[in-house]
Amino acid sequence: MAVSFSDLHTETGLKTLEEFLSGKTYISGDQISRDDIKVFAAVSKKPGGEFPNVCRWYESVSSIVAPRFPGVAIGVNIAGQAAPSAAAPAAEAAKASEDDDDLDLFGDETEEEKKAAEEREAAVKASSKKKESGKSSVLLDIKPWDDETDMKKLEEAVRSIEMPGLLWGASKLVPVGYGIKKLQIMLTIVDDLVSIDDLIEEHLTAEPCNEYVQSCDIVAFNKI
Image 1 (cartoon, helix red, strand yellow):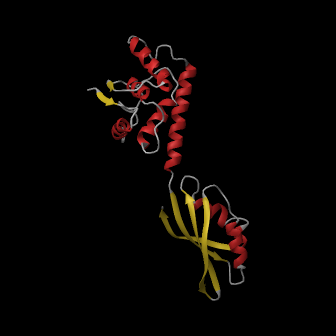
Image 2: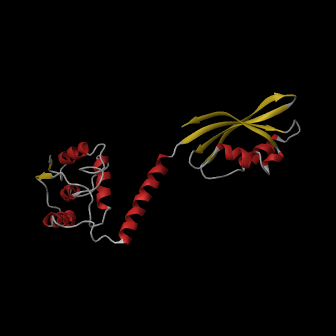
Image 3: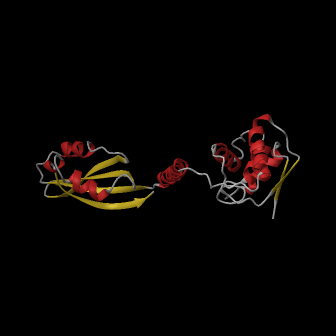
C-alpha cells in the first residue's frame, strides 16, 4: 500500500513526515529505496532541530552516494511539493531509476564495491556499539600492609593509574583497627574499556602500587 505525503516544503508537511519516521530508519523499511529518493527530492532543505526524525533520515539519505538502492519500494505519492533546485539531482536519480525497471542492480557490482559496502556496514555497527557502551560506578576498599604504611603515598600511587575510560573520584580513610586505616575510593569506568578485575590484579596489587597496597576489595559495583 502506497504512503502519501504532501507539502513537504512546509512545516505542516514536515510534521507529518516526522511522525511517520518515528521508530523507522527509512520510508519503506530498514534499507534505502526509491521511496526515500522521492521523498528526499520533495524536501527543499535539511530540516531544523525541531524535526529530529526527519533530520536523521535526511542526513542518512544524503550521505549515500552509491547508485544502487537495495531496499524494496512500496510506492509513495507526493502531493503539493515544491521544486527546489537543491533536490534536483535526487529527483533526476529517482526518475532515471524508475525509467529502467529491468536494470540489474547487482549484476555488475565489483569486488571493490562489495568490500567498500562491507567496510561501511562494519563501521556503522562499531559506531553503534561504541555509543551504547555503558558506565559503572565502583567503590573500592584498598588496604595497606600495616600501620606504618604512608597512606598519602598509597593514594598518590592509586590515582597515578591512568587509562582510557577510568575516572577516579572522592576518597576517605576508614579506620580498620590497631591503628591501621584503609583507603575507600570511588571510581567511574566505561565498561567496554576498563575491566575492574584487571585494574585490581594488573595495577593496584602489582608493581609499583604493591609497595603500599596489600589487598583490594570491591565494596559496591553499580551500573550508571
